Amino acid sequence: MISNHKERIISLCVIVLLAGCTSAPRPTVEWTCRNNDAEISCQGNSCDVAMPEEFTPMELTMDTNGGLSLCAYSGCWSGQANEFHFTGDYFSITGLEVPWSATEGAATDILTTINIKTGIATLLTNDFSHPMTCKAS
Image 1 (cartoon, rainbow, N blue to C red):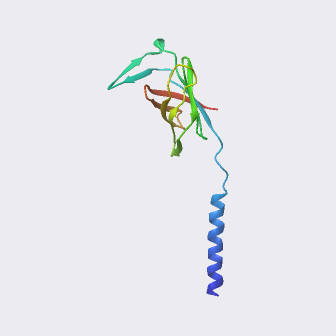
Image 2: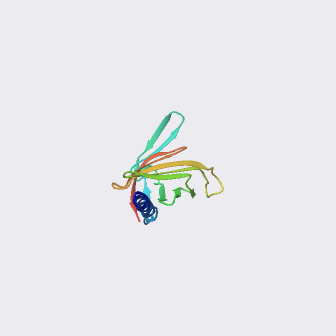
Image 3: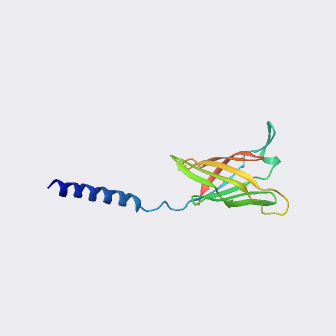
């Protein structure tokens, strides 16, 4: 009788574990973000802030599968993130040495975190540090 009871408990545990493993995956979400309010460029130990009439906004596109693209002026850094994850209301994505699409320019590191409820993100690269507003598509 005890053996039969143990088998039932083990079977129930296996069913519960399998149910957790087979839950539906999270649907892919893509966000498009822009730094419409300011462009913050940093070199060394200082940063310069340009106001809206002084720059062309960058456009960041990222998705929950790790797709990442940051476009500026004459080209884009585009690729697959090295790391991406959700923590509470935040989605963070990191791309290291993301390649530049144009002939002139170098790869860069890109780190961004978005609050998925408010649509506000922060972007850090080797040369820029922007607050961004985002929309899910």
